[in-house]
Length: 144
Image (cartoon, rainbow, N blue to C red):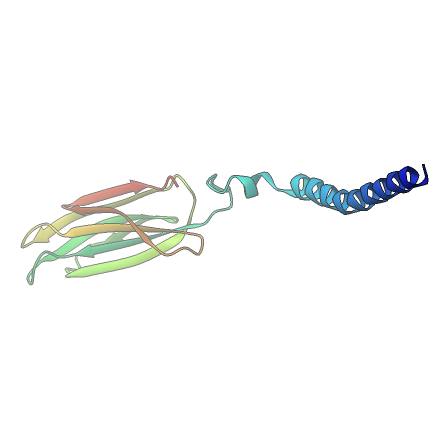
């Protein structure tokens, strides 16, 4: 009988030790789950405070390709260049918000249509090419 009582006491002691180890783990797990922010669980959802930057690049066609009289949308309105004939142009604007419509329109060019590229950067990420057109216009609406 003493052996049985001793075995029961040993089992109870073992259960107490096991529970004392499991209890902090359960509390830690509950704390972690309750402290998670919804945005931490859904990284693909755009934030309202994301900043986007737009980089426009225009390249004339070939060695003699030139263009002039172009406009580009900016956060402040429309950028216009009148009269200056160039082989290439690039400019970065921002910050802008999600939904911003990036547009370039070229009125005059010689030796073939220029190539227009629109690159976009989100927050501190590198720029990514979003639109490339050979012609007199290109547009892209920021939607990521």
